[in-house]
Length: 570
Ligand code: PEP
Ligand code: MG
Image (cartoon, rainbow, N blue to C red; front, side):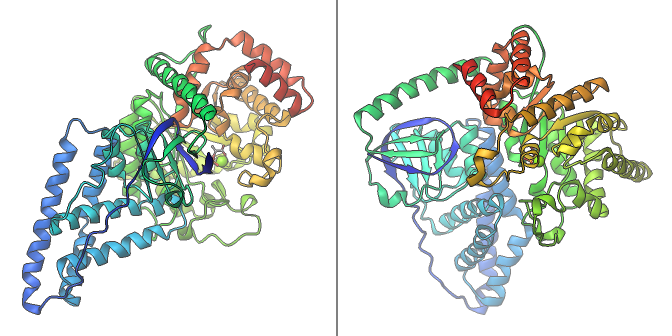
C-alpha cells in the first residue's frame, strides 16, 4: 500500500481500477508552401474553422449536455471566432509560407506556452482551453481523430498528465469513478467542471504516471486530495464504508436543495455563495443559492496585458446579475495587492505587501481605473439586484471617500442617459481590526457589512494566512476574533443594517452555530459546501446557538473554545 498526496479539487471517493490515458500527439508535418498556394491554404483554413464551429454548435445544442459543458464549448467557439487568431494564422501562411496545419500548430503552441507560463493559476490553466481547440481543429484537418477515451468504463479511475475541460465532460458521460492528473490546479476550467459534476478529482499528484500501471487497484480521495495505491484490506473496508456514507449524505443533501434556509426554530438565514470567476455561477444556481455574497473581481486584473474596459466589465457583471436574479449579486471592487499582484496596475514591490497598498487603497490611488469599475457595476445594477462592496476598509473615512466617487460616477452615467439603480446598496468589508472596532461609524455610512474572516484573522493575530508553517497561530476561534465579530454585529444591528460573513469561516461546519449565535444574518460560502452548511443551519436551534455562544464568550483561550466546539460535535 502506498499513499501519494495531491491537491483536493472535487470531493468524493472513488474505488476502482486505473485507466491511464496518454494524450496522443497529432502527427503534423512541418511543411512549407509555394507562393501560388497561399490562396488555397486560406480557403482551406476558413472552411476548416467553419466546419469546427458547426461541430461545436451541434455539441452545444445537444440537450444531454450539461450547462457547464455548453458554456465551455461556447468559450471554445469564441476562441475560434477571435479575429486576432485568424489574422495571426493567416500571417504565418502568407508571410512565412507555412502550410495551414503547420501555421495552426505554431500559433496555438505559442498561445498555450504564453498562458501556461503565467504565474496566476487561473490564467495558466486557460491554456488547456486553447489546447482543446487546437486538438479539435487539427484532428479535423488531419482527419486523425481517435477517441482517446474510448477504453474507459464505469469502473475506471482515469489517470492523465492533464485533462481538457471537454475531456472532463466526456469522461463524466462515460461514468468514470474519478480523475487524477499530474498537473492542473484548483481553479482550472477542468476543475470547475469536475466540481459542478461532483466528479471526484485530485490534481497535482507528482509522478503519478510513474508510480502506477494500467489496471492497478486504487482509492482516490477527492476530499483529502490523496491516491492510495494497492490499498490493504483494512483500508478498503474503511473506504467502502466511507463511500456508502457519502452516497447517503449526497442523497440527503440533494433533498434539501429546495428548502428555505432557516433554523429548526424558524430564524431565516440568507445562504449565499462566493465566486472568483464567472464560470462558477452554474454550480451556484444548481444548488439554489440565495445570491452571491462575494464576487471577487481580481480575475479581471491579474496576468492581463491591458486593463479591462468598462464595457468588458459591464458584460461580465450584467450576465451574472441576470443569471442570479432576483437574488442579490454583491460585487467587490478590486482587491489586488498583498498576495494578488497585478502587473498592469504597476504596484511597486513592497517589503510587507499584506500591510501595503492593497484593497481599497489601490483604488483610491488609481481613481480613473476605480471609476471604470464603479461605472460598470452601476450599469449592471439596473435590474436592482446588484450591490457594491469595498475591501480592506480601515475606517469610515474611506467609505465616505468612495461614496463621493460613486456619486460622481452616477452623475457621469446620468449625463449619458445610462440607466442604473439609483439606490444601489453599499457595503464595507470588515477585515481589518480597526474596521471592526470602528464598525459603529462605518455602519452609519453603509447599507450592509460583510466580515472577511480570512484577513480579519490574519491581521488580528499577526499570522500570515498563506504561511503553512505558522498555521497554529491562524485561529478562527481565537477569543479576539469572536469578540470582534460580536462587536461588529452589535454595531451594525444598532444602526439597523445586516451583517454577513464571507470569509472561509462561514464554510467551516464547526463554526456555523457559533456564528449564528453571534447574530450573523447571512453566510456566503464556497459553492461546493453550500448544501452541507445549509443542512447544519436547518438542524440548529437559535436558543442552543445563543447558549453555546454565551459560553464561548466566557472562555479565556482558544483551547477552551476548541474543547467546547469538539464536545458539541461529539
Ligand atoms: C476575507 O478576507 O475573508 C475575504 C473574504 O476576502 P479575500 O479572501 O478575497 O481576501
Ligand atoms: Mg480579504
